[in-house]
Image 1 (cartoon, one colour):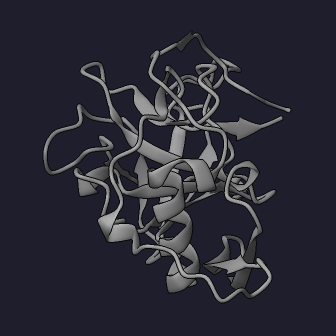
Image 2: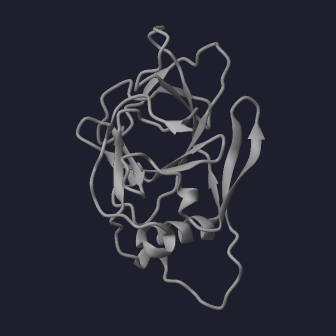
Length: 211
């Protein structure tokens, strides 16, 4: 069951239930499945930096695909470093990522710094939407309950597959597969869709995770 380690701030906006009813979700589905394959840019794992037996909101290590290690929110985010990445030495402890970070450059995302997907090892997919003035990250909240929603519950007939594993870190690519039966109808391009009224959820934990 997905839960957060700290409080949720609910942002109340309208929402739609499925991709077919919401232009942002429909555009996102078309974009992901038409492009198909995306590079996994990096890997996230929790790490108790303070050695206080708890994972705080910035107790996360990000390992880039080229092997560099960073602490998430180790420094104050800015225009050129939206995630507050602080370069660190990779700990000698076992590397065990629980999620992957994928830059998608979605045309409908106005601020491309946040055009990312966070995908758990169990294939739950969360869409980053931005951050508030306190640098708490916002994820797509389809059902307006203040929690980040797994996109695959709302993108009908879409499956995720991981490809090309590397030792310790895991896959290097993710594929989005549209399993919808072929029909003669066509849909509009994702680049012509209007913006969504789905609510972003603002969480005091940078990343959703599975428990």
